[in-house]
Image 1 (tube, rainbow, N blue to C red):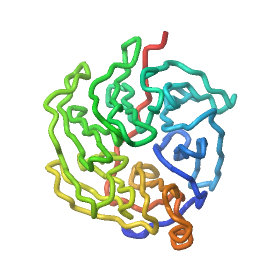
Image 2 (image 1 turned 90 degrees about the vertical axis):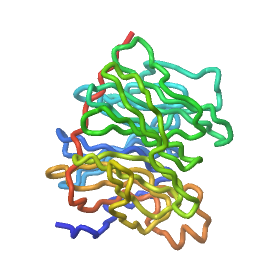
Image 3 (image 1 turned 135 degrees about the vertical axis):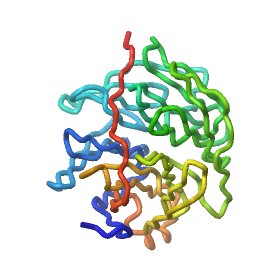
Image 4 (image 1 turned 30 degrees about the vertical axis):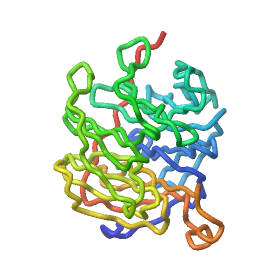
Length: 295
């Protein structure tokens, strides 16, 4: 058993841009992606089994859909991934009017709807948006004006939605109606340059928000009122997202990235791009499966 502050690199795979971990309870495995490496990864901690698949393009997220299949984000498209067949099937294309956009971070709400964001690949234009896809025939845009949208997450009751504007270093909070509409958008936490950039987020069973900081060497836990109540430091600067898994959903799995580090920084951070784990001391929320209306 790891001590509460013992951070361990459980897979030093040197991902260029590791992202989007989630815990599959049925498989007792953590899934995640390497966006720039065009890879999907799966790791079973108890058996130390590691497996990877190559995506046809930059893959921004992987989330469970039904038994044996997953939804993934590709540039300008949501696709289904079947690992048993090593097969990717485009389900929906979007934002063809923004050819330099790609999909980025995503999550599933308590109603099993898929929420995902888009971003400008050049990190220059606020052409990114946030989408919801549930019973609708097509994804529905629910907010816009993001250069790099990130970290979609929900409170345990599904009534509060968090969205991150990474370059503006702000996390927004919304109220959510039963049918998935957003309202009462307000800044929840505004960060400073010394903090790094807020990246992926996740919510624990107590309703606290865990934020990974790109360039900030850490993940931090914030109360539902926005106060920082814990910080866990990692041995590399670019920390991207956290997911809860393992027994009782009390192990935190954390993805990191090598992208953007200089040769000297890479020498000083040999574990950058690895998958890390530590005992969180609090439980996470079970991972829901995506349920979308396919054509």
